[in-house]
Length: 336
Image 1 (cartoon, rainbow, N blue to C red):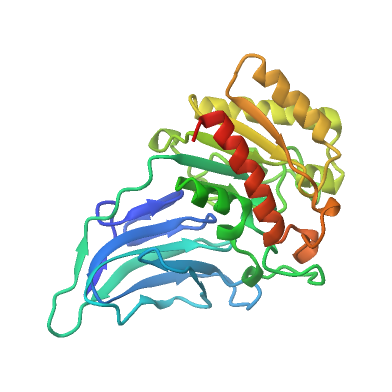
Image 2 (image 1 turned 180 degrees about the vertical axis):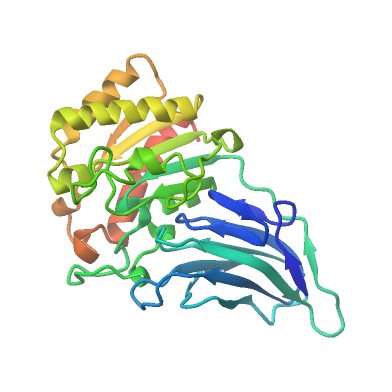
């Protein structure tokens, strides 16, 4: 049985765009959550990413709160999510595990079945958690290379899992409805290669990173916004201290305008630390008139053992450590 998708019969996870023929999504952790009566479910997935093994999108599929199954999607196809389940009610989530790419994905419809003796039904979707956390950042937030090893020197989507990034782990700890607005190589003032297109403050305001449509912040207001940025401004060496201080101050101002009541927490230091003093200055200045703005220093992976993954990025062990520090800080400022 085919079922067209709408905001009435599925829950949208993360920033997504409704199209006439489905749901378009691409941010890390974005996708859908649905509930059905039956024994099996699948989605018709459409995408036009280059069909290269190292770049194929990866999805995370979870059924009835069980173990997460990661699936690489090489082509547009009918993708089985679960099968041979006991006939009854089941809850399924499908989210993007790898980061935003050049082209978005589209779920065109659901296919559900219940065997020969029963009728499959798409049921009202579950309610989302009340707590809301938004994560904004670069490759660290994406989980770039967190499944890889220090010897791996090229990016593979198979080695990137946003669900096991510090952001995904912290969101899971708090059972929070989360958004991960992140893109590798991007900075506040300059990207890692010195360019100034698709900077974090620019894509933060978009529905999808590579489309022009602006996000309507009134649709979803977080309790906490976590910013993890400055690594690419630092690592590329193109951003001066003065530029970073001003860039951070302006971004904090804009994030506050978009989220009037949220705690805003800037964390930094997992990979680089050169710009930490000026980021701290920008945060401290903003906090003088806004007691919901905070800073969290993260210990660099270079000072720890066994925490380096692909291309010098944090591995899962490092992300777990960072998540623990973040969880403690969020608990302190929110009382959760």
